[in-house]
Length: 170
Image (cartoon, rainbow, N blue to C red):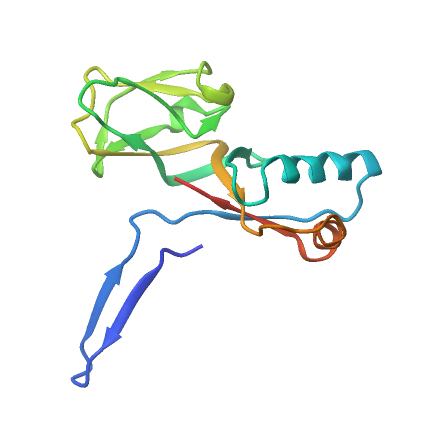
């Protein structure tokens, strides 16, 4: 998905561009050709337990691949260990950036929330600094259902025919 922007064109032909977000948010569509009744009920109960779009949850992409410009967190000047939004990260592929500048960190396999991998800085990144990463691994995103208040029947229909969209949340 692209990063939202506003482009205004003037009579002179010049443009003014404004980017709304620094990072794009991922949108994932869950769609299944076939599920057992038990599997379908597990998904329905998960959706219902999240109260539709209200509650957040962690979603892991199903395959290991290269991910660039992924948000890790914000520095506060004291915290030195951060969970990566990844598990089974290939440590040799990991590049960490603080405010866009590549930075040296120590890779820690596992131990983070939801079995995510971690990184450790020698000193905590400055307060407010943005930490991003590039890595090969299984991406973990915090997400919510995009559609709210689906009936059981509509949920089933969308799951098999249109897909049910989940939206990343930072």
